[in-house]
Image (cartoon, rainbow, N blue to C red; front, side):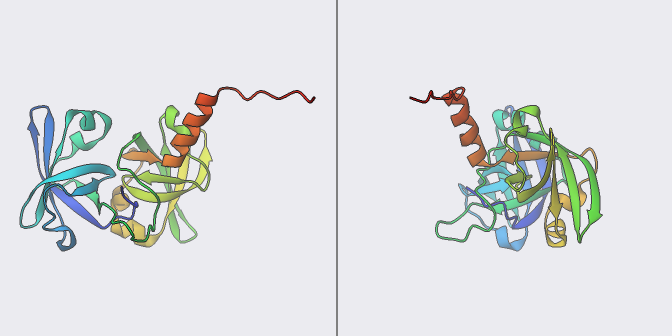
Length: 205
């Protein structure tokens, strides 16, 4: 489990195909160095397990199912990635509950500056649109964000200068594809409503 508060940006140093999967080596800053194998790290919002540790790198295996559902298969040396270690029980939750299970891809459709922030608009798959609500939470490449506007299959978020500099948002432009994870509460509500069927009005006695 994660909070969506990015700790660091790492860079891919190697991406090696192995038996239908992918071994990723990522150069990380000092704060994340030396994590033992078995540790969980959100890599652009995807929960991956550390399988090996180098002097300044962490290695991860992304299996076929992960590659089919995410954009990690397109990573290559030099690709920058948002990184966050898993939460520790008892710590403050500064973002929102992020599971590290990507729901689908999104695409940047436009950006604009205003009110001291940068606004990014994203297009989402139709099946995810109902899980994104005004002033609700969404994770974009692992970053916990509040939805500022919703219009059909598009939503907008505002990024403050600090987040812009501390994440890969600074690299986004129209056409950039990203990982989306909708709020886990929205999933449960949608599932519960679907399971309950249409609501019937009761007759007055």
